[in-house]
Image 1 (cartoon, rainbow, N blue to C red):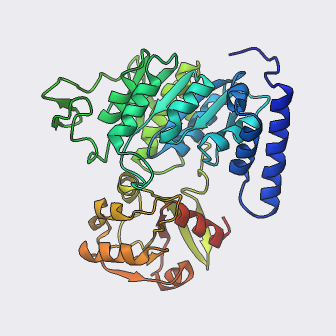
Image 2 (image 1 turned 30 degrees about the vertical axis):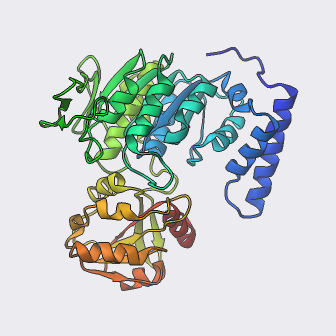
Length: 412
């Protein structure tokens, strides 16, 4: 870690102050946290501010299509065993939001930063991270994000020769190909439930062979590396073969995988697996995800799913039929305006659940459910859906802006 001398120039200090003032004004006006607009103003005044703020921190970057917000929270909790942490816990994961987060952490030792996949290489260049966690890559926001192999190529080129320890998922061929340009990689067998974006070899374009949990390209020899950490049921296996129990309040296999990767990151900084995993138990919800809230006298569990891989993981953790399920999909700028991804989701996994459909694109979703032979009702809004739902806790699954709409409606 760098020394504790103040890395901020007078210009940088003015930028930080102005950014905080703008963010506070945005919050006062009811326009959200203000972190993005505050960061934009600060970076306009000092374009090098992000690099300056990162100078005195041991920076950990976390990037993926799914799970990066949760994994960032788990890593932050684990590293607090070793010192103060600053993090963009609310998920503002582009340079402006990251700059705002780091501006509030003058006493921190560690900066645990979630980074949007498109911005990873640039943020890594600015922040000189000690560790980078790469979890998965799959299709998402088809109108904004590059095709998955192009994203992997950006990562591969951007991380080539990086001095960071890269903690990477050995079960995702795209992640492995991206991370393989780095000289110091710690491989984690975290699993890969969604495989539809990884049937062609990212190295040569050949067809991937996927016997069991293994994978390899029969044409160029690109293959799954041997992991040193692994998720095994309810345990994390460390490089010495010791099994450490995972006790999380967060549901599902995907979050156990996130915990395994987080434990591997924590170990890079000397935090033992037992300590790291015990601290992760404190995380109950992440920016509203997994929260159970009361609304109209009913219990609603709020679940975020933004893309086919995320929906598949979410379906695996909801309560079994006949638990009622409310689905909400928007297609605003932050979601991606292309809803064709709905056709990649296997909605037959909801068979037996009473389904209620809301959101800006409820009719798009209704057509998809009709084709999947699901029984559902289209509702005007959340209130009507809750009123129509049969008794019991309701699982509410929504994509990004639909999730934020729902949180505002239930007062979460």
